[in-house]
Image (cartoon, rainbow over all chains, first blue to last red; front, side, top):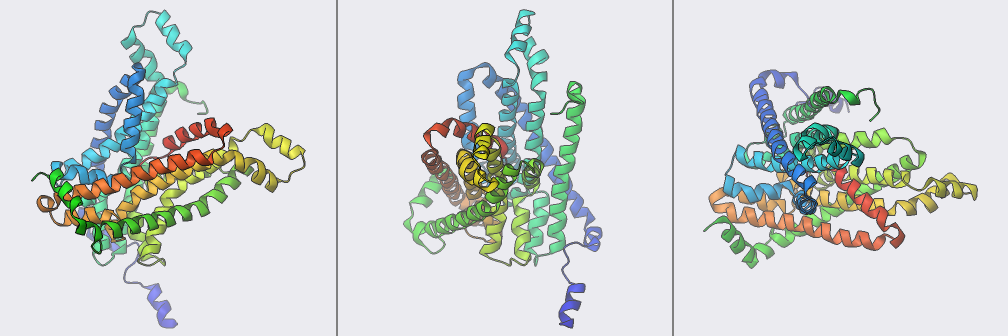
Length: 228
Length: 240
């Protein structure tokens, strides 16, 4: 009994260890940097592709159904399967990870942007038309600003899920913090390494989400003080 | 031979299906662990969600659960849980998958009860039904479309996520993809794509079958609510 307790008091494989963090700060920071960089690039690319797609779906109703159906089907495809489809062509590396996570982020942003655009009240649209706004002027001055909350929700959701999804990149050796988690598991179940990777992953998602929430507040001053 | 041709060849080799560790074995593992995970998720999420919806509290908790699970990488749970008291093997994989089934189940159970017509609830109260009876006889039946939509979303999500169990040698169809990657891309390309086709096909099949099931369990007058519930469910989930 006593032996058992003493073992628990000073376990050889703790869940967290400053020693580990100090000794491996270089590789931890490298993994964190890669993870952040992959996430940032994926979300930016996804947003750049998603916005025009959502606007196209908004303008042309016939396109909306097919775009939504396509995103729905893509969404059902498991991430590992998508890696499997793309890896033989894009190779083992960052390009594959980037494409897969950007595709999923794309779906989230398209859906939320379209929802935001569809929430623009018809009266507002008609008033803008009456004031002589053309299609593009109305889009940039009226509809996109009013859809901003929806777009931002989409970008935030996409960012948080992308941070989690990048870890699946270990299958092609580029999982950022996932690499840390997976290596920890394979090297005699090194708990401190697994936990450090996990905690950093969740923190990264939280920090990016807060940053985007702050940006959203700055971009939509008219919503401040209103209960969403 | 290009990877797609190699994949077709791989899928056409009967031994790849019937060997130990072949497609049929992996499919069985995949389905059984997914089913257990969804069952576990339902057992936890439905009572909690229904009760929170009934009492009208805990909307924030429901939101918190879905936000937090969105940020936790599947890989992290799959590697952490075997090192806890759950131990290596099936139990830890099933629990890890169940965690990701909870948010859609919980959110839909909660919304399903919340959206029940307040007049129906008041009428039931007026007829002298107790709180528990209102929940069981009025709110629960009205929430069925939402429960079904949540079930479908959760099941598809779990079947998709179960592919990742292969990272910790947990079995399932993902194992075929992982083995392909182990072979190196030139030799394993066909097997990798074949595995991807199987995993994606299974997810879509489950989605399709459950869509039919969902339609059957939803009484006709509630079908409009079902469509609304589906849209909500689709909007509430992300990541796979």
